[in-house]
Structure formats: C-alpha cells, structure tokens
Amino acid sequence: ISVWSAVPQGPPDPILGVTEAFKADPNPRKINLGVGAYRDENGKPYILPSVSTAEASFVGEADKEYLPITGLASFTSAAAKLAYGSDSAPLSQGAVAVTQSISGTGALRIGGAFLARFYPTSKVIYLPTPSWGNHTPIFRDSGLEVKQYRYFDKSTVGLDWAGMLADIRAMPQGSIVLLHACAHNPTGVDPTQEQWKELSNIVKEGKLFPFFDMAYQGFASGDIARDAFAPRHFVSEGHQIALCQSFAKNMGLYGERVGLFSLVTSDKEEKARVESQLKILIRPLYSNPPVHGARIAGSILNDPALYKQWEGEVKGMANRIISMRTTLYDLLTSTHKTPGDWAHIKSQIGMFSFTGLTQPQTEALASKRSVYMTKDGRISMAGLNGGNVEYFAESVDGAVK
Ligand code: PMP
Image 1 (cartoon, helix red, strand yellow):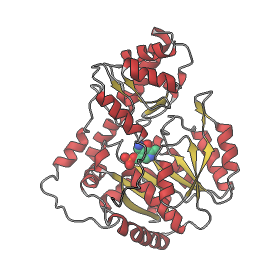
Image 2 (cartoon, helix red, strand yellow):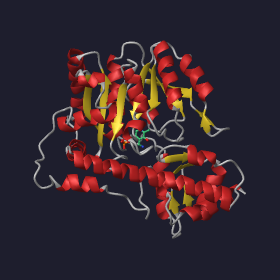
Image 3 (cartoon, helix red, strand yellow):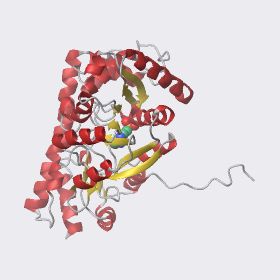
Image 4 (tube, helix red, strand yellow):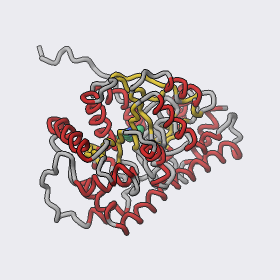
C-alpha cells in the first residue's frame, strides 16, 4: 500500500478548466474568454516591443548570480515610484519598506504572512464579494482568517455602494480590509474617485488596515497615475497601507513573475526593521526572487525613452480593450437588439466584464457555439477582437433570446 493512498482527489482550477475544454474543442470558430491574459487583435499573445528592446539590451551579457533576498534594487525602487508617485512623501522620506515578489500572487502571500506575524490588532482580512478566486486560499494559507464584505450588486450589475459602506463600517476596529486598487477582478466594477475619498475616511474612522492589491496599474484606463489614484490618495491621507504590485498584465510579463510588495512605515528606522523581518520571512520560502523579469522591468522603468514607449504600449492595450467594449455594446444593442441593459459592458473597467449571463446561458454558449467563459459569466475582454466579436455578439444574442 502506498503512503499516499489516503490523498483525496482535489477539484480542478475553475479558470484553467475552461482553457482545457476550449483546447479540446475542434470548432475553428471557438473563442476562449476564460483566461485573464491580454491577446492582440489577432488573438495572439503580445510581447511588448519595449520588453523585447529591454531584454535584448542585456541578454547573453548579464550574469545569472543570485539577487539579494529583497530583489533587484534598481527595479524595486523604480517600481515603488511607479505605484506611489515620484512626489510621494513616505517614499522621499525613505519610509516605504519594499521587496521584490513572485508577481502579484507572491506579493499577496508575503503580505498575508507578514501581517499574520506582525500586525498587532487583528488576524482577520475582509475580501470583497466576489473577489479574485485565489485571494481566499492565499490569505488562508498565509495564516489569516478570511471574511467578506458586500461589493457587487447583481441586480444593477454595478457597485453595491450602500452594502459596501455598511459592511466596512461594521468591521471590528483594526480589521484588515483588502481593496482592489483598480480594475476589480472579476467584476470590472470600481468605486469612483469620490467614493474612494469616502472609503479613506471610513477606513480611518474604523482604524482599519488598508491592504491594496494593484495587479492592473495602467492596464485599466491606460493611464498609470489615474489607475493608482486609490492607493496614492490613501497614502496622502496618512494611511499606512500595504501594496501588492504585478507586472504580469501591464508589461505582459506573466510567466516571468515580476512583482513588488511594500509597506508604508513611519520613518527610515522603522522601515529598516520592517525590511529585516521581510527578509527573515522570505529566506525560508524561496531565498531570493527570479532575476530575468526584474531586469526587464527595471530597464524599462529606469530608461526615460523606453519608459515613454512602454506607456504608449500600455495605452494601446487598454484602448484596444475599451474599443472592444464599445463594439460589443453596439452589436448587442443596435445590431441584434438583444434584450436587457448592456450599459455595464461599456462602464466596466479593465480586462474583465461581468456580463450578467447566467450559468445555463454560459453552458449553452460553450456546448452550442464553442464560446468559453467562466460559469459566473465573466469574460476576458482581451479575448475579443475584430475577427471574433461579431460571432460572439450573435452567440450571446442567441443565448439570451
Ligand atoms: N490580484 C488580482 C486581482 C489578479 O487578477 C491577479 C491575476 N489574475 C493577481 C493578483 C496576481 O497575478 P500574478 O501573480 O500573475 O501577478
């Protein structure tokens, strides 16, 4: 008998399962809207030209030595500046503790583990309902207890602002609250800037700890500063935030695993203590982060010409997605006169759209039309392009009528 005979079969990942079904489908018109990765107008993965240029500048020349535990300093300082803004007070005071991370997932996991170990007031983190599916297991495995606050209103396919406020006000003092900085995944629904200002006040009143996940900076609106409004506003209001960054989407560095975790501290001396503990936490996990992607991102962020080029490429990705939203909306409302209100297709932000399609409708779309998405009706807008959006709209129209 094997030592592993009692290991139970676990369920497949809900998102990767969609890709498997898609791959097995022989229909040439099939569409995969499950995966959260950018695709160009031909439906192909996109290597940003700025990334290729940055990579070519060092490939074959840079050594493969270990990085320090907290990563490549020229990358981490530039990445922090990108998030907090070059005029950030705690940044210029040397009061932001930073470490490179294994993309956004790794940043969240380091942050969860650091708070579990050192945050004095609470071990409970509140997530929006719904949230990215990986948030719950990440925080649970890092030693925090996970609870929920209301976020999305199914009836309006929009923000449940009243429910969100009520739930955040009701959190025990000192609780940790997770906030998606922009382009909320999976709903595509974000608070407005006015609502963020009110949230900052309420978080302050409740002495809550704001923990930001920013996986889509620049990718949402096409504007780096605009997408960072929420964390920058919180910092300017005196909050000591935690921040997780990912360069998967905005640089297309998915598999390179480039990210950053940072904490705002009160001064240089406190930052040094916090960073020493981040090192103690990271060393037994993976010793030090991967070097290649950090070199690429660092080269782009530190070279003014390349940075400018990259900004244009980020805008290009964001704008292509935004134009697909308009095209899809027009096809549904004007061409097909599909029943229902589809305004949310245009108003939602970022890579994803919560279509409002029901589970039976998503199942019918997969089996009858070879159109694949997650069961909750979430589509990745990046999977649509000039060549398939008409087929998609016609399919949705058929599923709804
Ligand atoms: N947070 C959110 C909300 C996400 O959508 C993602 C990517 N799907 C991540 C974090 C982290 O992704 P990665 O680890 O690839 O950076």
